[in-house]
Image 1 (tube, rainbow, N blue to C red):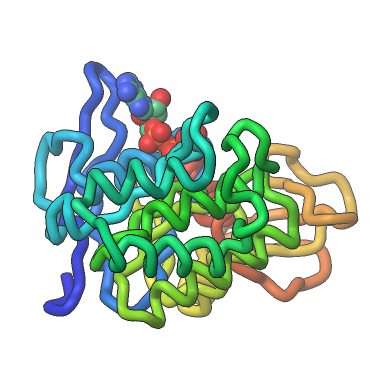
Image 2 (cartoon, rainbow, N blue to C red; image 1 turned 30 degrees about the horizontal axis):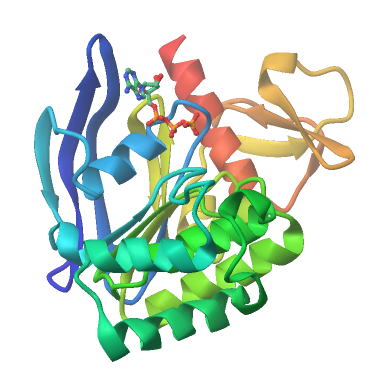
Length: 274
Ligand SMILES: Nc1ncnc2c1ncn2[C@@H]1O[C@H](COP(=O)(O)OP(=O)(O)OP(=O)(O)O)[C@@H](O)[C@H]1O
């Protein structure tokens, strides 16, 4: 864990009989965006909830600044259907003890940054999905948290709003926050400082995106002939095939990106566990 940041060290979390996280370590430095990626049930939400201090640890430790200096945007949540945009700001501001001119300055900043000025008197239930996500982001950052934890902030959001949200995330990091987010969009993760790839609660790969790509196990090829469907996946109009490091791969080489690297790492782990 870096001295100027936060993170998790050897963290395990068990829910009854499910070991959701198994000995995971992650540094979340200030002034940078750190991504947690992985498939369904990989443990992304559990790790973020552990960092936000809302789930008890079974083992390990978390270095975090405490609730008052943490901003948490839960997946698909953080807003209430029956409150207007302005009422959300009032509600969250009250929870942080913000009032007076300081509150009005922060409200104005949120409305400007999220483009929600014209919608300030609208109920959250009458906002588009993208507007709701931007509101949730604005609320999570209203108190200028030192640690910002975002669980799939752009999932289900149209491409234009995704760009807007990403700009807000990058701005929070350049303003000095330690930002950690879960995402299923590997093109987003590719733009972060560091990526943790989780699979069934365990770390598969970790590091700067280009390093993760370089360290991806085995060979990835464009699938041309008949390949075992277990080791094949679709990328746009093409099929990809994965081969273990000691195999002789067939098919054209491809430019491996983070998405290929993550799939390759998951397949390698499945092959090793089989
Ligand atoms: N409250 C809970 N009680 C019991 N099991 C849980 C609970 N929350 C999560 N799990 C289990 O823990 C594992 C990790 O779940 P988690 O939600 O952290 O994964 P995820 O990577 O965020 O996946 P998704 O994107 O599908 O939410 C899964 O097997 C899940 O079923």
